[in-house]
Length: 120
Image 1 (cartoon, rainbow, N blue to C red):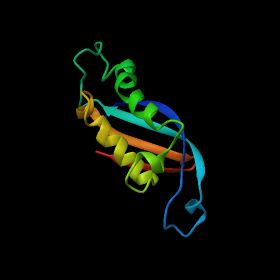
Image 2: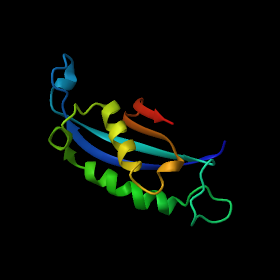
Image 3: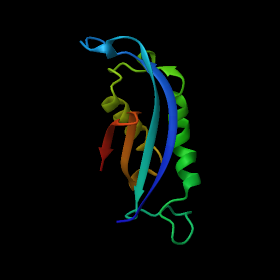
């Protein structure tokens, strides 16, 4: 399988209610989001030999990430803003776009060595 991945970045604040560790307190993250598409998908307007044009990924995914950027996630969501729930929300939003059928992986990294990941 061949895949293409585009990386996005966003900063946010949150806290985890009813959590007994440090994350119960207000804190922030500078997160990376990786969005991957596989060769089982071919965007109709992609050039010959492309799975999907990186511009198309940016067109549909950047507005989703921009919504999260520099926000307090507890105010945006009714769910607990864990990395797992954030990645699931991003997947659901991408699934509402025309590029959804090629989506194979979304990773949200809270730190350089900690991430949550969805795989098709």
